[in-house]
Length: 53
Image 1 (cartoon, rainbow, N blue to C red):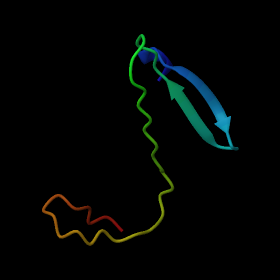
Image 2: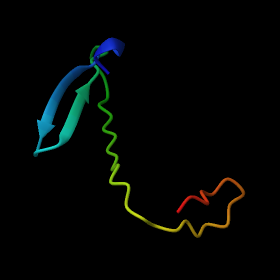
Image 3: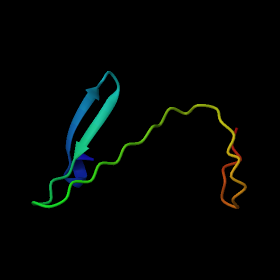
Image 4: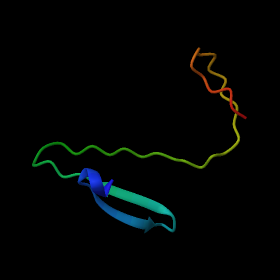
């Protein structure tokens, strides 16, 4: 993220990462994601659904 120009703060809440990209004044967008790697079966039935276990 740093190589892309983000300001990065590590170990937020223990193991989290916050990356901020400043691009002038205007609206603010927040994107949050979880990468827990918990074992779960995808049941969407979509052709691109994961089949990994």
